[in-house]
Length: 365
Image 1 (cartoon, rainbow, N blue to C red):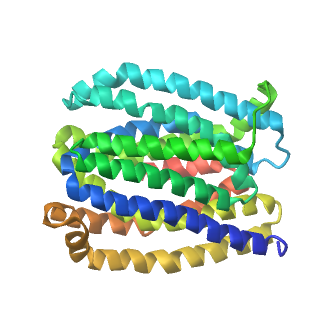
Image 2 (image 1 turned 90 degrees about the vertical axis):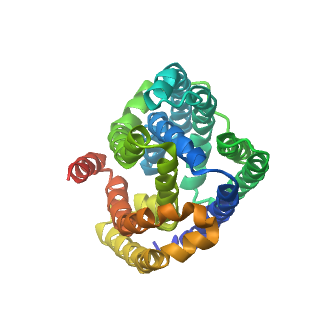
């Protein structure tokens, strides 16, 4: 482990730079755009993001984690995952395209039909980035990912702000997502210098899917669980009220999930390397748990205390309706690092079956 420590620390730094440079730009962009857009625009966007998140779970199907976790991965494994991801993304896009009208009628927001069909292209964009991103993660190369994410978010944010200023409403948010992810994916491909073999292995698929299938089911359960509130609020109340909930969830999630993910995405491949050394992996787990909670618990408590002046300063009086939602959600996200690290440990040990069972029990409770 000692030989890995300098590389791991360097990777954590670059993982942090990637996440907070990209997310920092996006955070500032969203504040600027929120001052020009209406809560209804964010309410509509929240509905779109729910369906994107559900379909994207199928596209990944746990294969990216399976590639990182597998020790004897080969170019055949990479090619198999790539062709599967692209194929399933096209299928998911057409399913979303066909159901767009029914979704719009369910929510009685008829502009959703075209909006869903346009944002559906993000599914295909995401599929192209799965393998290159996994390869960089395996190499603990977060420096390259930092550069690609930052450029994508910067260009997407600039276009989003201009469109919001020009009065395009929710289309400013849609364009921001498509352009950010599109630019980032193109740069990942260029910098990875990787091209898939012209082969698809059933044997490789079965091995990877045996591990990834449990993560697929758990991921699907988690996405539905986390977004069921958005679906119900959007149906039962107005997009205006949904916009308040959506922004509150964004701010509460921003600090907790981002800090945890910065650390965990680096530690996961390191844990996978040490998966057969129980003593070593236990030490890594305890160190990361202490570091994560030491940062996130005080941060969430501070945000609860300062929620009212925080929102008034950043978003103006028009958005004060989100304060109570933000305070409640901060209590929940305070525990996110504990939850995420426990599940990551099970993944590193190859116990995706326990991962799934634990997630089912927690979600039911």
